[in-house]
Amino acid sequence: MNADQITEDATQRMEKAIDVLKNGLSGVRTGRATPGLVDSLRVEVYGSLQPIKQIASVSVPEPSQLLIRPYDTGAIKDIEKAIVASDLGMAPQSDGRVIRLNVPPLSTEVRKKLVSRIKELAEESRVSIRNIRRDANKAADTAEKDKTISEDIRDDIKDSVQELTKKYEDQVNELAKTKEKDVMED
Picture (tube, rainbow, N blue to C red):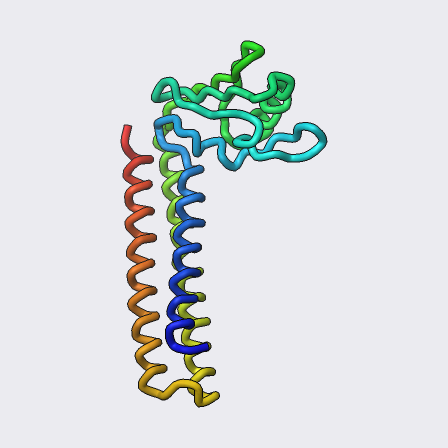
């Protein structure tokens, strides 16, 4: 690999780590209803597990309520079962055509648990980013040993990878801080 390929690969992989974190954080409850709360929900319907997005539309008619409208009303019981079996802690209310989920207000204890989960997700992302840095540095060392790049270029690669690492770790910290603030607000 040449210098550009090494840094480009590291950049793409760090972007993916940020995307994984954003996706994980979208599933963490705040005091408000968001469709992201049920994104990870999988429903057994038609003999296989399907993401809820593929079998229903999810909207937010009120700040503390989700409205799930199945594309096929025959799947409504399956969706209710999946919600009850999940760790959402919400009771589905169905009228036969749509399911309403009332998002209960968060207690202080629950908020603290959610903040610790946010910190876990952020740390997993930081570890992932550091592993990507290690891989990129290893690739630079290997390229230098194989005489495809010089020592100076290897050092430049390591410097730019370190800058990338700092940049993406800062993004992780900012995303986590923003989400913690959302969770702790009333």
